[in-house]
Image (cartoon, rainbow, N blue to C red):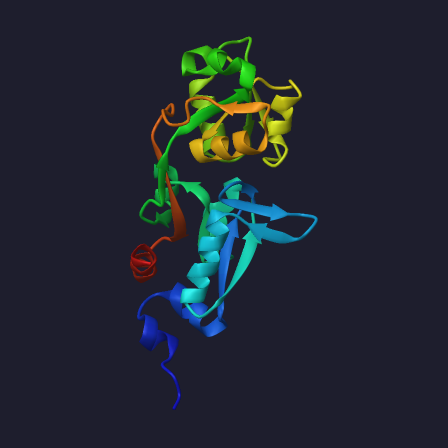
Length: 228
């Protein structure tokens, strides 16, 4: 017998209907934010917590995952235009994003945390210490880290960096003093790079949550995602 049609099985959700008809879940992610998402350019392989979650999400929908690599400032436009069905990869839940996209229930809770050379932890353990004209703060372009730096470090020299995969090398080489990012990333980097230490990652400078993003207005997709 012929199976149920997308509109019958998924009601008013255009996203779930498209996934069912195509057999593919298009997942937007940056591929540069470990431990959540990473794309190895040499091996052409994806890895990370949210990459695993994306694969499981697709599998549970009887579909295949297709990862679409994007920049941090492209989540809103790519999802709204239908270039992907879901945004994943340590995506912070912000009012700016929530005004343009549906954000899922939080998957993690943490906050912004400094990371620096291990001998300099005491120098950069507060916003006031970092916000100094003698301090060089490095931050990736296009995400909440850049927004945090602009808001909290107006007196410091803020270096905007294009490649989040090489940004920590600048601190190791002494070309920047400190970076402030979400606590899970600082913990991962400190584990991988012995020269670098996360600064009080269990007591971050603020509170934030991460989750997944979908097209605004698709209530059934949001309900499915949160239940999943």
